[in-house]
Amino acid sequence: MSPYDKENLSMSTLKDLCDEFEKNNHIDASFYRQFRVKRGLRNADGSGVMAGLTRICNVHGYVISDGEKQPAEGKLQYRGIDLCTLVDSCVKENRFGFEEVAWLLLFGKLPTQGQLERFTRLLAHCRELPEYFVEDMIIKAPSPNIMNKLARSVLALYSYDSNPEDTSLENLMRQSIHLIAQMPSIMVNAYQVKRRHYDKETMYFHPIDLNQSIAESILGALRIDKKFTPEEAHLLDICLMLHAEHGGGNNSTFTARAVSSSGTDTYSAIAAAIGSLKGPRHGGANIKVNEMLGYIKEGVQNWQDDDEIAAFLEKLMKKEAGDRSGLIYGMGHAVYTLSDPRAVILKANAKRLAEQKGLGADFALLDAVERLTPQVLAKVKGIDKTVCANVDLYSGLVYRILDIPTDLFTPLFAIARTPGWCAHRIEELTTGNRIIRPAYRAVLEEQAYVPLSERQ
Ligand SMILES: CC(=O)SCCNC(=O)CCNC(=O)[C@H](O)C(C)(C)COP(=O)(O)OP(=O)(O)OC[C@H]1O[C@@H](n2cnc3c(N)ncnc32)[C@H](O)[C@@H]1OP(=O)(O)O
Ligand SMILES: O=C([O-])CC(=O)C(=O)O
Image (cartoon, rainbow, N blue to C red; front, side, top):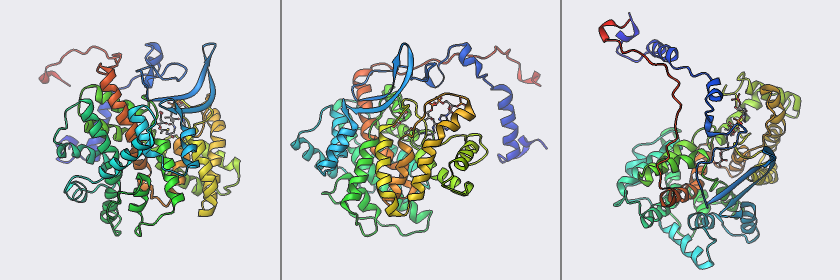
C-alpha cells in the first residue's frame, strides 16, 4: 500500500515526501560564490551588508585597515554613550538603569531627573495587563515555551487595543511604552501558568507594586515570598541594560525593521522579533549554553583538564556529541572579534558570585569553553576566525545565581530587547520610507508543463 493511501501523516509518508523534496531542491553551496550572492547578507570578509542607517546604536567589533578586516576589542554605544559607562554610573550611584536606558533608546538623549521619575512611574502604571487578559490569553492557553507564549500574547494584545493600526508617532510611542511595561507581566504570568500546567507545581500571582523598578518587580513576582536582596535586583537590572539594544542588523531587530517596513502593526512586528530571538543561533543560545554545560559535565571526566575539555568541544563541533548542531553555544559573533563588552561584564559578575552559590565549577567550565573554542574552531574548520564569548555565554549562569529558572533565560532577553525593537520600529517607520525587499538569484532550470494524465 502506498503511504499516500493512509489517512494519517505517518512517518513513512513523511519520508516519502521528504525524499521528493530532496530530489528537487538542492542548491550547490558554490553558487553563492559563482553568482556573488551575499550569503546571510554578509560580505566576503564576514562583515554585514549595509542595509540601513540608524542613530540608535553602534556595535563596533573590528577595524578595516588597508582594506582588510582586523580584530578589535568590542564596543557598544547606545545613542552614542558607551554601554559600560552607563552600567558603571548606575552601579556607582546605586540606582536602577533599565528604565533610563529605555528612555535613552526611545528618545535619543539621557532623561533629566524629572523626566526619568515621570517615565519610571508611567512604566509602572502601564504594567497591568488589560482586564481578563491573563485569564483568557494566558491561563486558558498555556504554553510549555515562554517565548512562544510571549509572541502569542503580544499578538493577542492587538485585539485589546482600540487603535492598533495607526502608525502615527504618538500611537507608536503609546504602544511601545505599553509593550515595554507589559512584557515582564506577560512573562511572569506565563511562567506561573507553565509551572502549574506542565510542571505540576504551585502557581502564585502577586499584586503589582508600583514602587518597584522593572528588575525588582520581576524578581518579586518569581519568588513565592516576594523577597530578594537589593544586590540581586541591581544585578538583574544590569542584565536588562546589557541586553536592551544591539543595532539594526541583529536578526530580531532586523526582523522587526523588515516587518515594520511593510507598514504593518506594532504587535505583528514585535511578535516576529520575539520569534527570531527565540532561535538558538540568536537569543535562544543562552538556554543552549546551559544544556551544553550539562553535556560537557557528562562527557568530560576531569573538569580541570583542558585537553579533555578541548577534545569534547571538538566532538561537539563535529556533531558527535551534544545536540548534534555542531555549534559551541555562547561563542562567536557576527560583529565582535576579540571581545563582546556585554560578555565581559557578565563574566565579571558571574566570577564574583558563582563560588558563593556553589556554581564555581560551572563558571570554570564556561571559562574553559571561552579559552579553548578558538583553537578547536581553527582545528576542526581550518579557519582563522577570531571568536570570543558572546553575551549568551555567561548570562544563564548569572540568572542561575539569581535563582531564575532556565525557562526564563531567553524571555528575559526579549523583555530587555523590547525598547531596542520599539526604537528601531519607530526609526524604520519615520525614516526608512522603503519596503525592505532584497533579491534572490534564481538558480532553477526551466521545466516543461506536463499535463496531469501524462505525468510519470
Ligand atoms: C545575542 C546573540 O545572538 S549572540 C550569538 C548567539 N549564538 C550563539 O552563541 C550560537 C553559536 N555561535 C554561532 O552560531 C555563530 O558564531 C554566530 C551565529 C553567532 C555568528 O555566526 P557567523 O558570523 O555567521 O559565523 P561565520 O559564518 O563567520 O562562521 C564561520 C564558520 O565558523 C562556524 N562557527 C562560528 N561560530 C561557531 C560556534 N560557536 N560553534 C561552532 N562553529 C562556529 C560557522 O558555523 C561557520 O562554519 P561553516 O563555514 O562550516 O558553516
Ligand atoms: O548582533 C547580533 O548579531 C546578535 C547580538 O549579539 C544581539 O542581538 O545582541
